[in-house]
Length: 144
Image 1 (cartoon, rainbow, N blue to C red):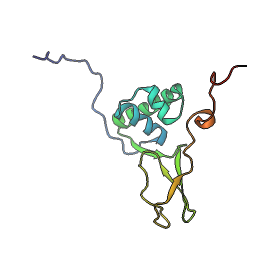
Image 2 (cartoon, rainbow, N blue to C red; image 1 turned 135 degrees about the vertical axis):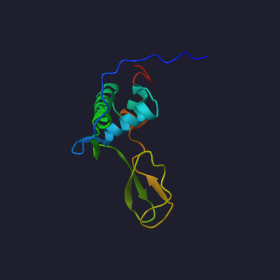
Image 3 (cartoon, helix red, strand yellow; image 1 turned 180 degrees about the horizontal axis):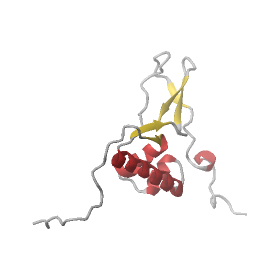
């Protein structure tokens, strides 16, 4: 049998909806909230996915949670702004068209210009650390 719920002291009146308030929240902050709070990832893994350091992820997440609290408590309206985010680059091998797709949307089905399925990623080697993951790493190979 579960324990009964204990009474808690709360020093907060129900929020009043303020029509004039608006909070700017960037795409980086939205992604940090999604990875940490919705997907349940730890900060190390979420930072690796975003391609940033864990302390930077922590700062972005802290600010995003502050803004999310303002939206909930004060009833402010969120204004989603851009931000520096990385897009995937594709090139059609038939018509030469180049286009961008955001991460997390899955692989496109065809070229938006000629409808061909003969295309490839242009940035597939990026994001793997120094050197793009090729060659000998530190401490590997021959020692002279």
